[in-house]
Image (tube, rainbow, N blue to C red; front, side):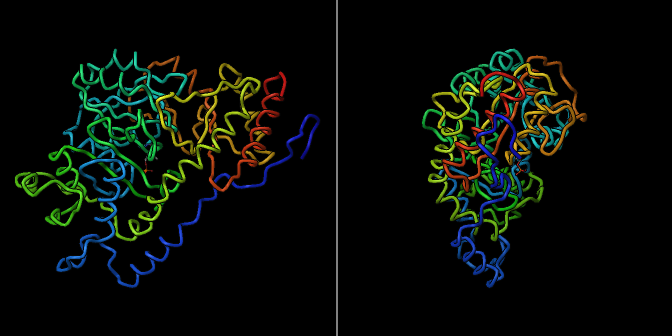
Length: 405
Ligand SMILES: *Cc1c(COP(=O)(O)O)cnc(C)c1O
């Protein structure tokens, strides 16, 4: 379909088709299936470390953490982190107002109550609002939403002063840095996801890292280690488990060797993938500069971001015009996700659709979330593809919001 003013044509590549598993991972998975050793603690007499234990050690080294445990999902990592910090029924937990449903869900899963902190126009947590609310809880579950990292120095200072422990939700920042330090290494715990639409793909999966021996021992026991914690390669020494092993409940949510086998080669490729995402992101960012009605979401200069998706705000545009932009792009093969759509759809990021928790009054955050448009950047796209996608969005924005394409 072409109309007057369309010069960029239509785009034909898929925005949602996952990347294949590297051949090395497929070979490791096949060998593992032949051996039948899928369980991380299977074959108790065997001294060979399994794929999960090896993956934990490699991931800990990748982010520079002392301890690491691999888990069933990113959301499970978040609830494990909360449990390991002793968060329980009736406690309040600070979190971003702009986040994904499993964050509020993890808080609810331990019987705690989210206290939402507003979002800034750069999609990071509003640090003034955080400073004002820090006294209301002893834990902050911080999401680096869509890969945007706030001023972590200021955040750390606010939380230290208020004695708030920080759990970093790095579902969108695996491979990213702040001031050169890996994302997930500024708080007491870092959590990551290996679900298909994040940065490593095992279908589902999660990771938790910490330098604190007590917290790591709790997390490992919570994950369902039984008395096999001695077979971990990124765990604290046995003393850390001496008393805890009788006290900490087994909330079974382990990772299996099959997933770890396909993740290990992907982890080795991650730095190269991050570079590839970044170069695509830069082409899109440049291509969307000064597009009609669209405000770019700027990355903080100290953030070494991953760029696996890009966001822009249709700030104060009428919902019908935003819907027209999304539909116009879709008709030309460009898939935009509108986080602020009036009815929650797909992966929801609107806190007012999580009615199990109290809904706060955050008008400025509502204004930003309502305007947020998001686009995935599949690595299968070439730089020329990205330039074409940007041109299509520009033309559709000019049509929906007026002004020059
Ligand atoms: C995906 C995601 C999670 C949860 O990860 P799963 O592995 O899908 O459970 C948590 N937080 C954010 C911000 C996410 O995008």
